[in-house]
Length: 93
Ligand SMILES: [Zn+2]
Image 1 (cartoon, rainbow, N blue to C red):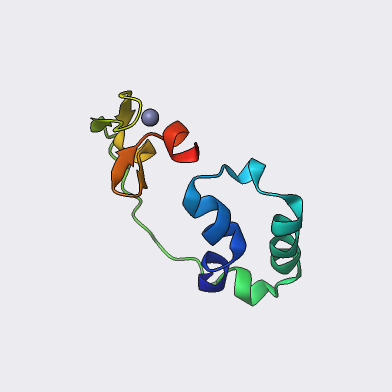
Image 2: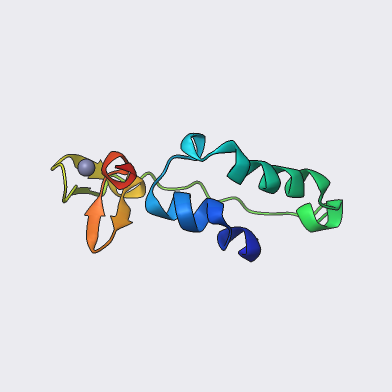
């Protein structure tokens, strides 16, 4: 996974706020092929069934004002762009 984070897909596009659908096919295709060809043991861990207590995630209504467009933005949808906290749309532009 760390290798994926260092790929052009992340460093040249996603980290700069480019939506995944706008990343050129020639950048995406090698990653898709790598995942499709990866051995099962690299893709997931399979174990015996065990008890797991799933805590419901608390909804967050924390928000901030986008420092570029001034829109109220829910925290989870905020992005860091340079030294600013921005909304997803401003992060992508
Ligand atoms: Zn914005």
